[in-house]
Each structure stands twice: as structure tokens, then as C-alpha cells.
Length: 115
Image: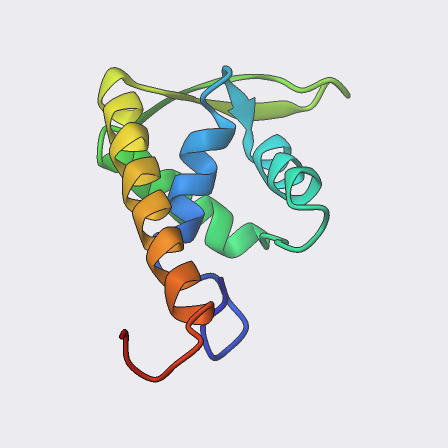
């Protein structure tokens, strides 16, 4: 979902980050790559918004982080879901599924008002 400036709607990036980390720790670039691959390139996350979101989620207690080394032997900060983050992910997924169903109903409407 895009806002009028072509960016992700508020909250979309958060749930995508949380979901990307649900299988284990990843560094920021790997999070962005997961989002790109899983959405067939329809959602591209730039560094600025990505790292702003990662830091905010860490401050909220939804992620923990520690320094390590990437596959190409570069120092990288690895993020993982905290227990609170897993709970938040479940809540976010439920909310997004309900929202997607509601939008789907509206877009499939065949008349201006329900009969």
C-alpha cells in the first residue's frame, strides 16, 4: 500500500519488518531483501525509512539487536524479535488481515449500497 507520495502507508513497514524477523535474526539489508523478494519487487524499502523503523521498533522493545558479521564478513547489526515483538506481530497480522478483507469487500462492490 502506498501513500500519495509513493511511500508505504504508516504501519506497513513495521509489520513487514516484524514478519521478516519471525524466522530468526537478520541484518537490515537482509530485511530489505526479504521484503523485495517476497513481494516480487513490488515493495522496495529504502535505507532511511528501514533503519528509522528498525531503531523505533527496537526502542519499543519489539526487537533486540546485537552486532555480528554478515556473509561478506562486514560488521552488521542483527535484529531479532523479542517476546513482545512476537505478540505485536500476531496483533498486527490480525489487524492487517481484517483491513485487507474490508478493502477487498469495498473494491468488489457491485452497487453503491448493499441491498
